[in-house]
Length: 463
Image (cartoon, rainbow, N blue to C red; front, side, top):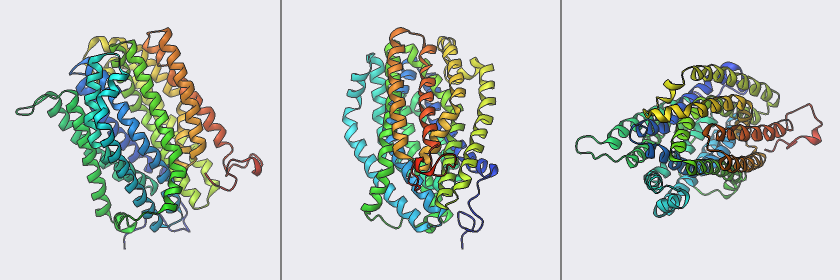
């Protein structure tokens, strides 16, 4: 008999620092490798042309606006699977997975088919520069072909994270990055009979790499026995009650993630109106910021998933300790990386482009980004934890309010200055808003004991 994903109920859910690190490391590596998808696109396109480098920023944010729908639904499914797994209800984990995977595939296919005819028109309406709009439209068009696979990947990752078996995510990301790097080299610049496709080649490579990652995740589930243990692929039957529960959590998170990525799209559209150079600089800075911030994402997701398992096991007293340990680990990881990056700016910026003017002009914005991300470690960490725990409605309102303030600030700052560094202070504004909201939600959670029970948020434990 294959070993269970967890120790016996008598042993409890492991929640010490070692468990957090062991669980977070694969997620961290996976996020790093997945980040390399956007990074490799930027690295190759940064040597192809400045217009393409900037257009890829807008195109990728539009694509991730679609993915945000799947991500929001997936976080809700992950929270339910984690609670079921913590309570040792393996059949329920599989039932939740089948329902969520079926919905995600259908939604991804529908969105791709509906959006393909309008990819270029949307970019033309949004972007001032005709050359950038055409390049961004090409990128979005070809990436849409990988949307159904990308949606299913979200469902598979939610399953593995929910059961705290995250090592497979590392290897799926290795497959994704290897496919993307190989195809980028072939399709962007061309080789032999393969023509140089430029930014379209980058998008095709990314779509193909998502399909490769999905195939790996499915095969890994079959080979490891997880598919049999949790009945992952037993068949899809419609369960209206479960879908309502998934939407009770997921619908809020779906809209929330769309709002969050929508504000990112607004940011890049506003920067594009400043200049093509400002857009190229912002793409490079964004890639680097996402690279160092993945530590916070990984530890927040991990601690949220462990906390969900503890929630399912009714071990409420351990949740605060897990979160505090995870926050300390986030700072311990972020500070040294940011310090090293601050000491070698030209080297780090040179990873993404060999255009000297872009590297020179990017330095001020680069330092502003580093400072901003260090200041917002705690807000983002707690925000990720709350999302993974299934606090759907409060998380939605936190994101909505923070995004509104962020958008207003971006609109104002881009109207009074063309300095990319000053424009990038908007990230600190967004993080501050998230931090205030997340702290207010967390201090009133069901397991807190410092306030009267009647004043706690969800006193019966309903998130």
